[in-house]
Length: 342
Ligand SMILES: [Zn+2]
Image 1 (cartoon, rainbow, N blue to C red):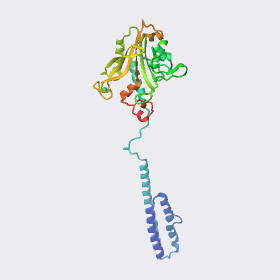
Image 2 (image 1 turned 90 degrees about the horizontal axis):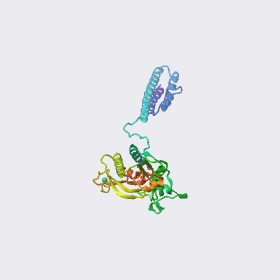
Image 3 (image 1 turned 180 degrees about the vertical axis):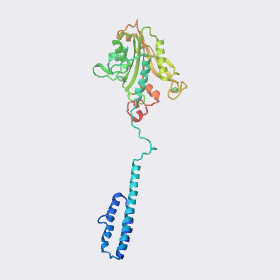
Image 4 (image 1 turned 60 degrees about the vertical axis):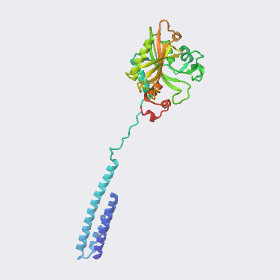
């Protein structure tokens, strides 16, 4: 009898430890089979009761049954605990920490040059100008001759212009669009010609072999320099704001006479003088002038009847100024770190 009772005692100690240390439901199930299964250790004791002497049988049977019940209860408790742990782990894995910064979806943005170009175009459209376009590959007549730029003019130097085969070239300004438009349309004319232009410049912070211009042309009867001034002043007010003033300085362009460089009151310091305007209070933004009669002759307009003005500006330069960007090469480098700021 002592043998059976000791065995039950030993088995009880073992079972309690095993069940308490089970780390998974699978392991717990293994212990259950070992103890209470068809060939389990507790099952075996109960099975052997027939061999215990009748006097001892009630006590051994009672102990064995109590052990069986205790193990059943311990298994159930441990199973519940393990299931709870499992649920908690799963919840922790799928939990959303609302304090973490979100993942921002990658979105594109409009290139700063296009943004500036659109803004300039919008202002000019609102003033009654309409869009004209022309090819980027031009011939010498449209790029130079018709614009009163004779063959010995420095602008025609090979160092400035990209010449192609067959007398063609990459346009060095948007002015040939004026010529093409006037050749194809009788006056009056009120157009803008935005586009890419090309010059043989070595790229650095302020020079690029590709840059962007917007050109304007206004032709009608009795157009005066006063009309030119008023138009550009309205343009500057709408583009840069109501405090903007312009300053016209005499200049020279082959295709206009008289010609002027136009400075705009500094948009950063309002003419007080700052780093951007180098203390002058003015920013140089465009060139303009009254269309030279020889240009009208080249396109078949009667210079005695028609007068007009033209103006042109560099979009890259305006964009650099407006956004305080200090390197024009950034516009062509497709650096998403730079572009995503716009
Ligand atoms: Zn300034």
